[in-house]
Length: 337
Image (cartoon, rainbow, N blue to C red):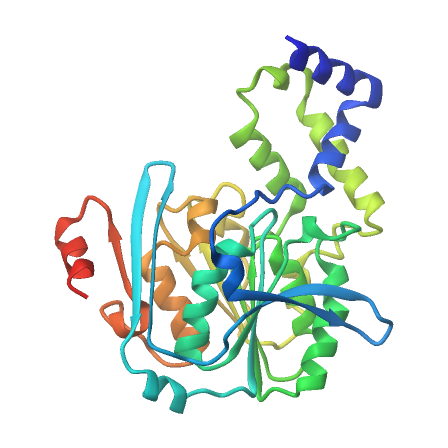
């Protein structure tokens, strides 16, 4: 009852839309526990004006014999993934420190969670992989656009032969903006956010519509909150409209979107016909499942475009093994590796 009263007065003293807007721009990233911290190092990426952001690198960048494994569950979708590096000498021979991969996390996506994928991508590509924190971790929320200048400066200083920019959900905004300012970039957007208002309303409906406090908050309140976020971040819808911005570039771009993703649906791209944009669509995956990369065709497509070579789904040396936890035959294969 105390919580109920507290929420009630918060809404009506400060205004529903203001309350929602503040919740949107505050850091919502969950804490992650475990021993991952000893394997990563946070570094400052700074531009010429000494504006710095945090980047996550691997503590030991050398390729070595290793096994990566994790179990995860999203709704009722339970998966297990295992990757074993079997030929470290070959991996080292393919290593190219002149290539960079940046991963721009989606809204509230913990950087620690992506560690497994970071280690895996660094080993199969030989490139240095750097993870950039989600936009809501910024001191001043700007949809990740405040990350662009430090990342561009890092790229210009290191002069990579090629740079791949991977943007998850809202992370697509910063990834796309960086791609406009550097040479030799390839852009990979996984479940990219194309319309902030649409995505916000969809998330509200999915997570909050059935909650008791939703009686005090209308869709109009959510829409007003979105406008407040724009005002407070000194941005507008056009600034983060990645579809509009892609039309004025020739950067090779790969879109990965699900037809069943209510937050960033593939239908947003149905009328986009650009020679430099390749659309890959999938069925049956919600937004979280897309961001978690727990679908074999999705993983295969992302890796094929990153490595610029055709990878088949049965190439477990590159992709690892991904099993439904109810698939005993597949789990047996993992146990035998």
